[in-house]
Each structure stands twice: as C-alpha cells, then as structure tokens.
Length: 106
Image (cartoon, rainbow, N blue to C red; front, side, top):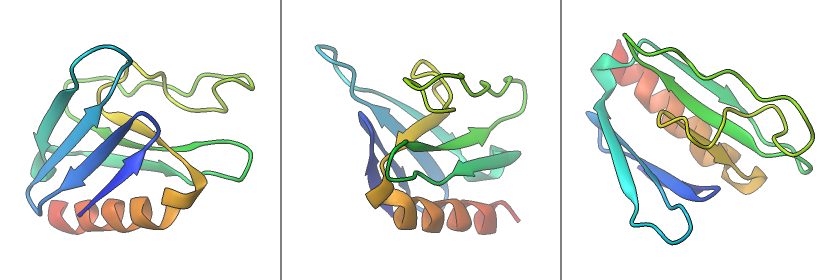
C-alpha cells in the first residue's frame, strides 16, 4: 500500500513504513521504521486550498509541531523525517494507510 504526497511518497507493506522524500537535486533518502514501533499517528486531511499531512510518532523523538502561516498551511516542516505533506487527491489513500498502520500496531 502506498501513495504519493507532496515531494515524496509513503509505502507500507504490513510491517514496515517507508517515507521517501525527494528534495530538489539530491538523491532520495528513505526513512524506514516498523509499524509496531509507532506510538501514534496524526492525519490532517488536505483541503482544496491547503495541503494536509500524515505524521507518525515514534518513541524517543519529539513530534514536529505544525508551522503557522499561509505558506505552510499548518503542516510540520519538510525536515521532519516522520511526516509527509499530502495533496487533496491523496486524502483517501492516506486515510487507508493510516488505518492499516493503526491496525498493525494493535
């Protein structure tokens, strides 16, 4: 199960979550962690005007807060390795992925 977000993608194979961000000019550096290690998820659906996000909370790391302002639209910063911004068209796929991760956690 996977979907494309804004400047990256998230995939989930039932056990491992992989977030691959594609910064301009650099080789993509995927971040991979087990669904069993996730302590919580945050999902903010995108609207037609602003991107939403998917964020995974892991033990020992602080969750990046939402950045205020119109340019960021209340999303975590791009540098946060455990989150990805999503466009409006990816809301359904992101919601299904978050539900699958939540089910795998329990």
